[in-house]
Image (tube, rainbow, N blue to C red; front, side, top):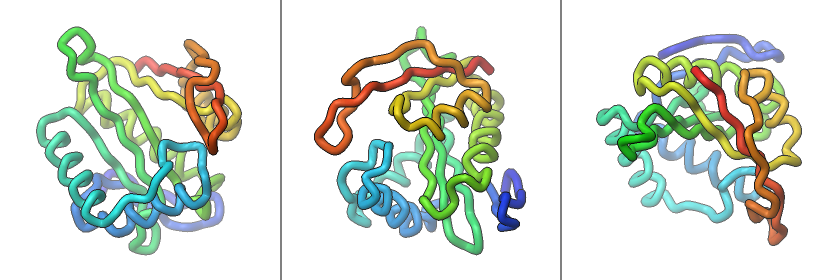
Length: 178
């Protein structure tokens, strides 16, 4: 376990590296984001087999120092996950891309902020990256504000860069130097 903290509502949450036994919780979380039509890359439901293969791949990349995948756990259940994946093109190995998912029930309680702080610290030391980038729906104001609070700064906009519920939306590109 990397960190334990209390949410704004007093829930004790722990942050740790993902393990294969998290697959069912992660599948349920991911598929709930599809149902919610959230501002994420979750657009189609995964099967247990697909999620199992995905987690095996993540664990393999972690061993190779190519990726970090952390989960936020409350009461024995995974309610959030964040990933930082290192660029593997030789001239770009100082960079990594960030992503995060939180179940609706835990948003706004400080879990995203704590998860981001933990994974960025790990990215700097474990992956030895110097910068982390992310892409976010520009209209996802709570996420944009959180990223800015953590120190990410916008460096570009891509109009009609992402599709969300059959509409093309503007994507905001952000970076944080570690």
